[in-house]
Length: 599
Image 1 (tube, rainbow, N blue to C red):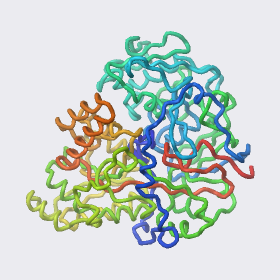
Image 2: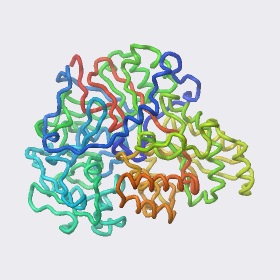
Image 3: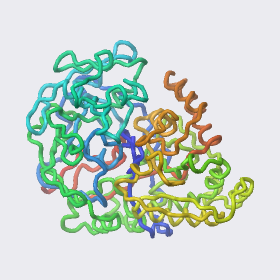
Image 4: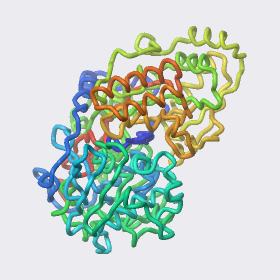
């Protein structure tokens, strides 16, 4: 999944900047008092570790189960503080766009979520979650009847082939790369450098479409996680007739229940019902409201203030991927009526201070910075106990096998950092007082608040910190450049599905050091690379031990990214919004079940 705005799919992840926070968030107004005891804990996170089930044709047949009390009609107002990172499915690997994708895009599969947050992969455009007869090397998908794009064009296997093949072209520079690399190796672009745009295609030995209704994926080794990978927003269908290459990112064609009626970049967007969407083909989504009015200029403090007041249009409004403003947290969690209008959950994201290993080459320096980080203050700037918990490692509590005692840098014992230890290590490394460090941060309230905290801590141990602000919408694009000019940057990553493979592989595999890839530290360690390849070939129980070994080597022996905190979510919605609940799949408000109580 994931970055936050972070990126992930199953949390949808992969380094995604989740909610932006206010400078005043570093104060002690973290929602103490009445709300103190019910902030989500690692026990809640453990409940999100259940393995994902694979659904059959019956589970994949629409319509979706009705939401009790749901009524049709009206528009929901969506508050955002900046524009979506992408709208082209192939570019979507960040959480805000992933949330949006479920409204307008559809893929071969999707995640169906029950009231307890348990997830089942079901067929979306496909009739089921997939069929394999050889242990996961070959997967066959049959397409449902009646699935059309917004102009009424039926979706065929040619559209699925086109969707996969366009990911090989330079048109797509963001988004997940699992399926492309599984089919064609890590240098997959060489297999089809122009994508499908010049008439060439992947061979049938890799991807076969024997008829209009059948798609067959053929891998060189078992890929049991394919149904989950295909459920990522990044593999949403792009109909061949509708593909406008680079322009598609601003005007995609809808297959889902809503379509874009009006879009003013950086300001607003209006979604209305897609009349070509047939609920009988969809076992996940609903089309209760007439549409959504997005406003992408509402700051996090303003969102929170409006929703607390619950007046006028705010009664019909939701926070999309932003969280409650930390400075107003106490106002939310100590007032019973306001608190009733919140959703809470443990996110799959880990926030880490990532080192550019091409620039910060000495491990003692990286360790010193890690010891110096005041993790508690960083959490405080993101909502206190409602925003996160101090991290010991780089794997989240939502992952199976999470070890809550793992804390090699002693962050739980010294939550505000160990300045003396940091100074000792820098002395050993021979680092001179006043050495410059360039720190890149996102221009969100949270990014700005945490920049102040980090700069202060690093200056205490003798560094001259040069802070460089990057626009939120392009942050991961900028730090994802191999030749970026930054020494340090905060990144957030969440698993794409409940396996360490979807964290350690995309973020720490040396074969994925490339422009636009999510190996933001540029780590390329022979032993880690070998452990990754070993784990990917093992059964889950055996692989768990290998992933743990890789994790420990990454954190303790290399330290490409300092663990800072595990992320939690708390969001507000208006009193007229019904069906609101936390989604373990998206780690935000469940966008599929919303309606207006009084349309």
